[in-house]
Image 1: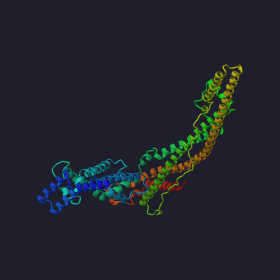
Image 2 (image 1 turned 90 degrees about the vertical axis):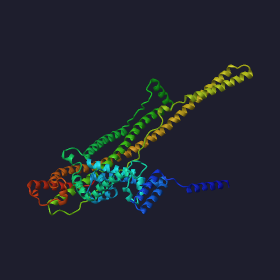
Image 3 (image 1 turned 180 degrees about the vertical axis):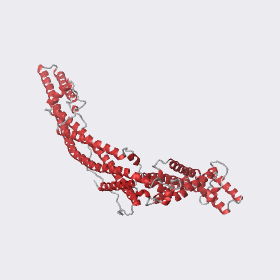
Length: 552
């Protein structure tokens, strides 16, 4: 009953709180006051006044989440579109086909206000003016939205009220200079980005394809004789394969010829040698064998670690090689497309067969799971337990002396025979405890040897599987790298043959060329030098296509 009574009181308090009159914020009061003045001056209708006043009051009474959820969603949307256009612009660096204007229109559709289409087109091409404008647009959209969020939420369904503002910079007045200048900025952004994009996207796409599709970003390096990314990767890959071959050869030698790695902490003093000698005698030679087996295991464990690292590095190179190979396939598709496009301007008859973008099979070699061979003890850790031996001998001596003391109290004196018997008893105790500890040392050594031998067998089994797997990877990498080198060389030959003709036929993109297109039957096409260069391009393209058809 007491709990029910408390619950009833709580409900009454909640009802009384909800029914109490709410107080409007300073922003809401000033906004309503402005609306009342505009109504009195007949600058807004009664219907607009009532609708706007109701919106202000409803918004002001909302919870924190109710007020700002839309702002959080809008800011998240703008940031997500920025990230999305940045990711998509990465693809423009290595395109197989020309960029479609409809693709740009799609980006414009969801991010045109802040210049997402400009970001998409010029993000990766060091265009300073475009970079400044896209970031200016992005920042301005966020600032305009944040500074005028309250006004937007007040008048979103009465947009005519955005044109009214009070001559103040006060933050507590939504319709202030902030709104006035923000409205002007939004108008210019809409004009430049939205309307400008709607009109000029076809031309911008034409310019983009002329500058960045027909002229790949690595063309200048190729023409100047500098190495490209694929060349540098191939040099790294070749060095890796060479060092890997040597390392596998060394490991095979270590395994076959019983190489060892001695314990770096081994006691090499005279006393250490003496202890090992007597320990070997006590364990019937097992301690010496254990040391040698652990030295062998130490070497095999090092080999396993090296092989595990080699497998990881080789898998990484395999992934990277596949990526470069696919980029080379894309470059081949793009270059053969450009060759066909250029030849089609000069010649009327050209093959209509559509080429295909080749995709190589990703080479995945089965490798054993990594293992770490070794044990968590050293041979020197297994030794005669002197502490236990002395403790046992001490206890037996105490027992013997206590027995002698008891007899002395009862009989009054002790004979020579009693002392001899006590000495014999003590000697037997010492001998028995010594033998017991030696047997324990022998058992521990044998058990350690079994564990070490098991680890040695597992390490040898891993090495037996790992070396052929790595060699298979090597063979696959060599075959794929040969195709990569051939495609890279063909790409360089094509660029050298294509660039002079591209400059003569297409030149720099201009608005006039965009409107009129490229004229056919030019006098240039009939010159001997031009036809010789064209024939060279045709031969290079033919060889390029043959090399591109080869698969791994």
